[in-house]
Length: 141
Image 1 (tube, rainbow, N blue to C red):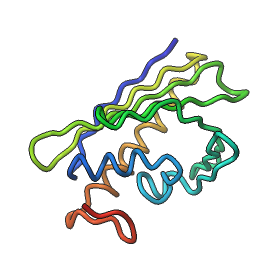
Image 2: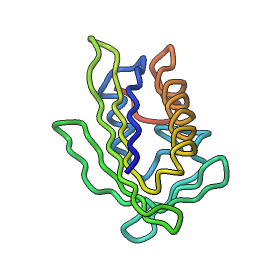
Image 3: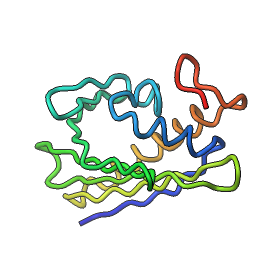
Image 4: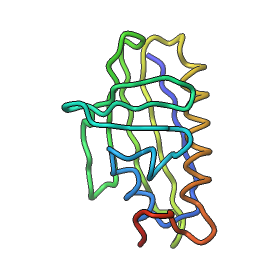
């Protein structure tokens, strides 16, 4: 099984980053706009449309508030296994680190997953790390 780990520094308060991560239904508005174009509920899953045209069904496995940790899974014809965790940690008084771990099969899709994670990390850093600390039209600390 392949596993990719990302440790993403974000110039934003951890509470702000966690609020965006934990809003499972709104990654296109709160976490990675531009990278994710749309997300909508379909029963227990969310259907996510990415900028590259890929559509994925993702299930929320766990949302651990005290640990600021969210776990989700993808079930599809393309992947045999896909489980991811995202945890938000404080990095000083006003910065955050986002630890993102994805385990998946088949191993051959590792270059694609790595590329997607790099793009998503940049989108998070750009969007959440705004100089004024605000997210237009969204939650503010």
